Length: 193
Image (tube, rainbow, N blue to C red; front, side, top):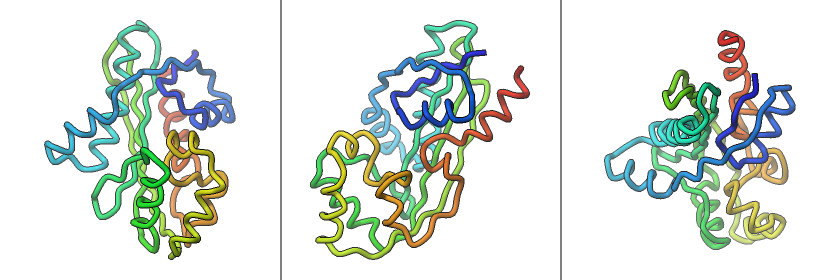
């Protein structure tokens, strides 16, 4: 059974490959900013925003691929229950890191599996992270080591690379922090077979 991954995230695809989950990528092209704006206006929490985005991506691709299992995923950062978005520029990235510096925050990874345009399973995983205290100069030095495309696509820290050095502690599943709670997905797929 080949899963469709409704995400352009190379990291998510790599996690599926590492766990020998056969998959192909079909990007959903959902306008995440519009969805977030609408949900924030309704007072949605970061958890609800993450769940909704995973579901919307999954269902959109599922509608066009009958009888296939489609996995949608989304990860968000929650600081004091406020959604921290991906940066739109290097300056934006610096401001986000300054906010997160010396702060405990949560990374929420939500996944949804749909079939025939209907959600059949979803799951969210929350990890707790505490960033060390950094000066602006230290943060600029960190940012200078990351390509702009990477920064804008994946957010301000990549725990699988340089970003690991930013943290005092990380409590949570590594794969989930990187964007995919794979063990939960595999448990569900195993029951589905």
